[in-house]
Image 1 (tube, rainbow, N blue to C red):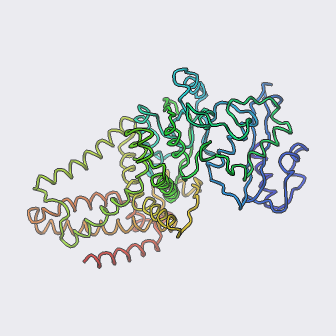
Image 2 (image 1 turned 180 degrees about the horizontal axis):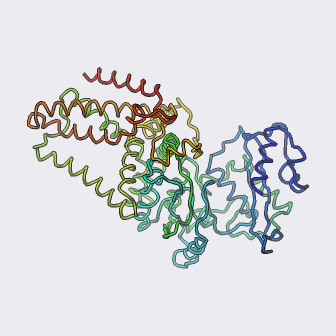
Length: 535
């Protein structure tokens, strides 16, 4: 039914008019197309609310009543901000309040589906527990992906974000909201546990009981009114009520603000995945997603609700650190960029940046490197991860630091200065047969000539050059005469190993996923200039 209606709506939009084949019955004409105008487009159109199934009349093949199913497309206008996903979620919260006002709300991404029919029973066990119900805002399930290749080359599963770190946060105030696979108490959208914020109309209150039929004229009129573009003007939605505005990562920000208000959350990770979803299957999609996260995280970090100041006051030290850990992700691009270029340029000029290998202080660098990576590997192993996936995860951390994090920080800085305007970049998650085949084989996809590939290509070139030059010097002069450069040679070698997919895409591949010649030439040219300036 949904696919049929979707096709008819899209055909109507493309043709610019409503044909008879677009309409199934008079009810559809009254509800879905009554407000049609010549200016109706994908970006500008009135609210559309269509009751596809009603639990009072529609039955399945075994003659049992079906649950309600309502299609909602909120009003869109160039004169009003859309607030992206958070705005859509708030519109759905209000529309659902006027039609059913169920006390529990589930949010799912469009590519996510239920994988376990027992999930709702698990959630109800928490929400019906009298000891925690009054302070529990949401129950978060880990985001698990289907269709990942064996090594998860792009680290799309984000095991630290969705599985490892929430376990630690669950021992405090609970995990952060990750945007999907999450059950909310409707009450949590209306202020802190001890102080209820009365919405602007009683029909939106979480305690309101809907008495009129879901398809009645009064119910539908009210639903259309609360889904309008200008409805949120000066009434607190997105600021004090509902999902919060102010960051492109509305999930992280909403969960953070709720916990600052005194709510707690619960992490539920059963053996059988509650939900399964799709992940990006191209490198550029993954980097675009991380770039959007970067902008959103920096929005929070440098706002008046900063996790460092506001979070510390409201949540305490440990939970503040937990949220700040995510918020400072983008800034780590500074350290990653320095480690990717500075020691290597110094190595080419014979300048030591680390202690000599015989100096006891060098053990500190070895300890930090082995300790951090060893602890991370142990976390992966305890959460049923493999060494191959862990290796790809730390490789992608380096790649993101030199691409999405770096470009995201630049974008955020320019936007803060009013030089550029940021947009919401959706992740396509669409693939053709050849791309799918390369992904299943574990081959990186560089087919798009994106500027984000330039820094990582530059790092790959400078590191292989410095490693070769350093190794030749070590072979000719011996360890004793090269003690001060050993750690730099090892660092270059580590980066070279991580950059193997880049070398492969530049030199050894001829498929459509190879590195663009344009990107390679630009990176080589900029690397040459960098080396000349350093020399």
